[in-house]
Image 1: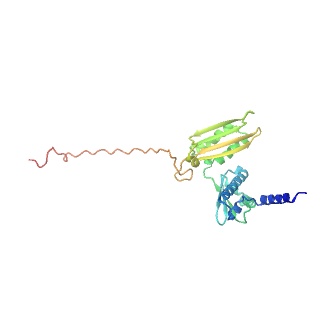
Image 2 (image 1 turned 60 degrees about the horizontal axis):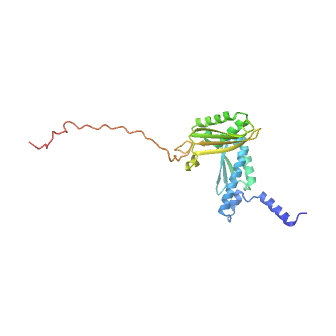
Image 3 (image 1 turned 180 degrees about the horizontal axis):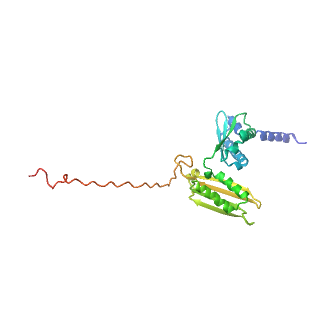
Length: 264
């Protein structure tokens, strides 16, 4: 027979598991919650949601999620390369995902909505390319050939630079890392936050686990659609030289013989 304090602790733990303190809506609704706890709760919610969608939609070109909280409802925008598969037949799959998210995080009825947004340029999306490489390796393609195929596809679609690192037991029992690079790639500073898209995935092969890292440097886009709007700080623009305007020669009648014209 369990003592009373142990039973009470077990009941409390079960209650917390059913309604976790880190749920997004519970945190938003409580007025007395501190700012620190709210930011931590939002971060945990985003991390869990991202992990769940990454596992569920890996075959459909999942490329990230965005959470927008409005006074009326919470909007979750799923970015993917193949939105048709994310939506499913007559929107069935997106409704299933909405129900799962609503039940897991304790959202009230009709207060959360999921949307699917198509990625404009999948070659510049590190997540999509990482998943593509993962499935190539699972399909039995040689590591070197798979990496070079991904690099060529990314560079042909307007990226400035790319780096692919693959590590683990590639052929022999000894683990090693292979690094493939092409183009121009920055590693530090403020521009890295805007220009570098990075993704990491794990591949469970027969001989062990492989790690894949893809880094893509996006090209500058003044419109801000296909790449960052902010130009690189060390970017030097060389303008075309201006056309030389020929110096006009004075007319013969304007030229005087010297002295004053009034002289006799």
